[in-house]
Length: 616
Image 1 (cartoon, helix red, strand yellow):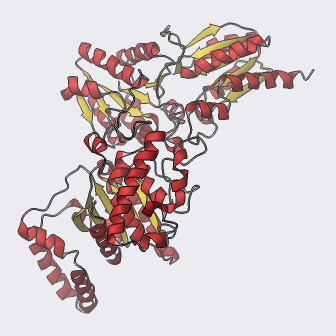
Image 2 (tube, rainbow, N blue to C red; image 1 turned 90 degrees about the vertical axis):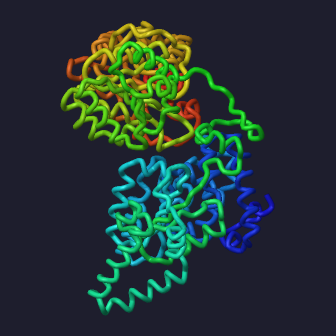
Image 3 (cartoon, helix red, strand yellow; image 1 turned 30 degrees about the vertical axis):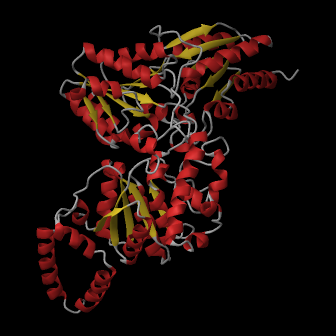
C-alpha cells in the first residue's frame, strides 16, 4: 500500500506517473477486499470502477467540481481518494462511514445517491444552476448500464441533449451492449471523432462558420449523411448528445485522456466506458451478483457464509407452491430476482416470470395490465423501491380495484444501507391507496398464511415483511385483524410485524416490576384491528403503540383518532416509531436501541408514563 498510503491530497494523485497509477489501482483493489470482507458492503461494483474513479479524480477536482454517482454503490474508491480511507473499518457500521455518497460526510459528495437512474437529472440541475449563477465548476454524472433500464435516465438524457449544457455523462457499461461499432471504417471514425486534433479543428470550424449559417447547415446535413452510412448511430446521438466510445474502462491512462477531451468539448457529451464488474478479483468476477452486496466474508478464498432462512426465501418458496396451483399467477421483479427470493420461481416458471429492470413504475403499470386481462401478478419489490410507483398504485391499480399483490420486502428497519433503504414509509404511502389491504406478518408461518390470503382475495393487497429472519414468535395467523397475545390491565402495548418479539419481552420486563401489560399484535394494517385495541384500552386506559414506520404512517395515530371518535378516554398515550422516517445506518438492534424500540426502551417508556401520571 505504499502509493495509496502516500496520498495525502489530490496533488499527490496528480503527481503520479503512469506506472504508479497502475500500481495504485492494484492497491485500491487490495484495500477494498480487505475492508469490505470485514464489514460487508458493495464489492463487485467498486472493483469494476477503480480505474474509472482514479481517472475522474485526476481530471475533475471533487472538492470543486460535481461528480455524481448513479447509484452510490460504486463510490467507495471515491471515498478512499477523498480522505476517508482511514474510516473504512467503520464502513456501514453504526456511527461510521456510510455506504453511499453523503454530503454531510464530505464536501466531495455533492448529493445523496442510494437509488438508481436519477444522476443525469440531478447533474443537469447542477449544471443549469452553474450557468444561471455564472459559477465555475464542471459537472459529471457516472451512470451504470443498469440505471439505463430506468425511464428516469432517459428523461434526464433527453432534457440534457436539448439543453446544450456543458456536462459529461460517463456510462459505466459492465454488461449491456449498446450498439457496438463494427468494421474497420467505423472503428477509424470512432477514434477520429475523439482525437484532439479533430476537436481543435471542429472548434475552429464552428467559429468560422458562424458567419455562414446556411452553408454550415448544408455541410452539417452532408456530414450527418456520411456518418449515418458509415458509423452506426446510437440513441445518445439521437437525443442530442455527443457520443464518445466505447473506451476500455480499465486502461486508466487512456481513460484519463478521453475524460479530458470530453470535458474540454464544452457541450453535452456521453462517454461510453466498458468495465468488468468484480475486476481483478477472480471470485468477484465469476460471481458478480453474489459480491454486488455482500456481508462479511473470507477475503482470501471468497467464501461467503451461508445464511439461514429469511422472509425473502420463505416468500419465494410459498409463491412457487401457489403458482403450481394457479396458472394465472405471475411474478414480477425490478432487477431484484435474487434479493426478493424469486430466483427459483424464475427457473421453474420462466414464461410467468418478468424482470423489468430498474423500472418500478413500469412494473406496477404492467401488473395493472396483466390483472385487467385476467392474470394474477405478484410484484416482489423492496419497500423503498416501490415508493417510486405511488402514482401507478393509485391510477393503474386502485381506481379499477384490480387484483394485484405487492410483496413488499425490506419493510421497516434494514440496517447498514441507511437512510436511502430503511423501509420507513410503506405504511404511509400504501395506506393512502384506495382499497389496498395491508398485511404485516410477524413470522414465516404468518407470511405464508397472509400471502395465500392476498392471492385468494380480490383487489389490491400488500404483504409487508422485514429483511432477515424471524424471531421467537413463530405462530401462524389466526385470520383476525388483531390478536391479544397477553392479557393485562395496567396498559395496552400495540405493535405489528417482527417487533412483537421485543414487545413481548418488554411485557416480561414490566411484569418483573409489577406492571401488567396487555399485548395486542396488529396482523393487518388495513383493515386495522381498531375494535380489538379499543376494547383493551377501555380496560387499561393507557396506550403504547410501537412500529418500525414513520410517524405519518403509524397505526398509533389512527388508533388515537378512533379512541377520540368513540369517546374512549385515555390517561396516557405514547407512540414509538421512526419519527420523520430518516434513520441513519447501523445494525437493526443498534437502531432499535437508539429509537427506544427494543424491549428495554419500551419498558422504560412505560415506566416514564406511569411516573408522570403519579410522581409518588
